[in-house]
Image (cartoon, rainbow, N blue to C red):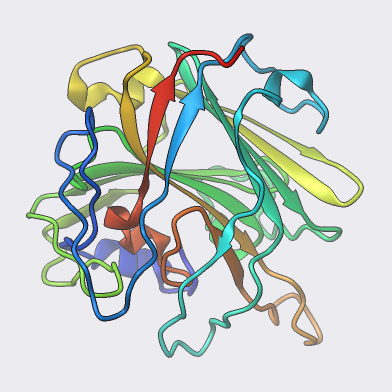
Length: 286
């Protein structure tokens, strides 16, 4: 989500999509990736193991329950921004992510290296937390880019959760961004609070940790299922926003640096549902 003060207006004024989808067994609605002159990076895939024991959220960096998780050691840089006045491409902030699952939850742990986290809205629910430092999970339980969840968590534990529905066939441009035709086709529910969502944050000396337990019953609602299982596939993207000081006199002067699991245009992950990667749930790792 995202970049500008007009973000909510852009969320409400979005619309249709369709560019890059990876054909994956068990992920309905996925289409083969189509090429473009921009040579967009391929969509990432991952095998996520079942947790041997359900993770306790908000624990220290060395918590052994996360050792067997699928590990993303470094999120990638975003794609170049459009010519917006308030966005600035920069180095991808150092961020690692771990993923696990059990029948009840998909677990995500972000470790965001930063010695000065910035949370202008504190612990407010559904505040525009993307205006500060934030981690984000985008997840599509069916894989057809017609409905997806966006979950944001800031360093203080503030949460913004959204449920977005597209009522038209998905169409995206050559940069992987939804095309804008009618705000009647893009419905992003800011009043949505995900039932059963659990989060915890923790500050370390040079990093902040955000743990999410995303309930299976919500992820699989359109599949009319309640529990995750080995063999399930989901569409997913993992995003971090970092807003370091840009040399101005106050906190209004901050650059935007962004890191992604599947690279998307800077500040536009909410407009890039077809750029989500694919995770496959597999049994526990010995």
